[in-house]
Image 1: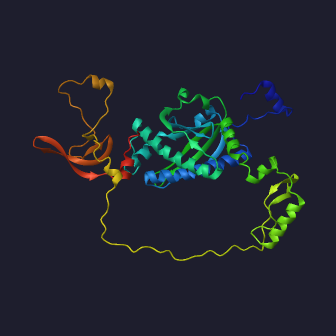
Image 2 (image 1 turned 90 degrees about the vertical axis):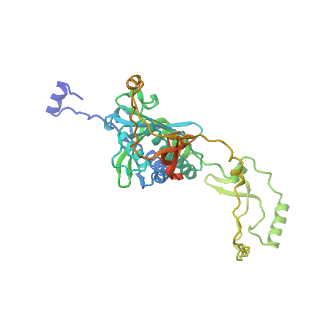
Length: 394
């Protein structure tokens, strides 16, 4: 911010003042800051556990720094290449949310999903990598939604994440609802055990984020007794109350006087209504009868019965495909293909081929020849965790 000559002269003479420009971003207000810190801590603690299970490594997402900025103010602080994950919270209305993850971090996560150590990832981000990180974030958001619903006693649903690689220098790639308005910016420290120590950012439009706070911090459902304030029954007759009191004295129960029309004190004074009477301190609940459980003796040697539900679908046909390899070609190279052209695949000679069932990787094997026909000798059957690590982003 430049100064005019008059301002400079006034400052030198000691007769003028100069107000420094406000910082580019500021912390969220106190009560809001506390709410968003708690909300994000609950979400990311549950989400970290889900991602740890998917990657087979300990993942920690620390409590965030909370600030308010516009996207234009935040943009210079971020690396250019980011994977943008668009999601949101749904509590009767949608509260949009945008996650920004560095392209290198996405490459590391994908490398680990492929069974490697994540230390030398392939930095070429394709649709396969962005789909994989979308699936990982889907698991994170699902776990976060469950934890938030339990904490706030309010159903919190998450929008299925949509992921894409963007360059932040191209602002047209950023959804309009996240530009030209104040944003709630949450910066997390993102750590994968022994592999990665990085940051990720979550952005929410500030007005929508404040609405999220109101929806979750509003008054809870009124207790059943409160309903009595709206339409209290007619007062009981003195004779009825006297008889009820005699009945209570004749047979001690869990409560003192019988239910009736009482005056109960509240912050605003005494409010008439139909209330349960106070507990009787002399009442003692009968002792519970406890005895060991009786089990029938185990009979060894019983044959295992087949699953009748599985028997119903054993004759459904499945398409089994053997994938020798694949590659990527530019359109120019595809147009140059002709009879006799050789296409180099991404598999080494002698490397196991992939066996897919309905497009899902199920096993690996080696190619053999049987009576002049090709076949595959199975060398490895993938377990459920291995198949999860080879998801193709469906």
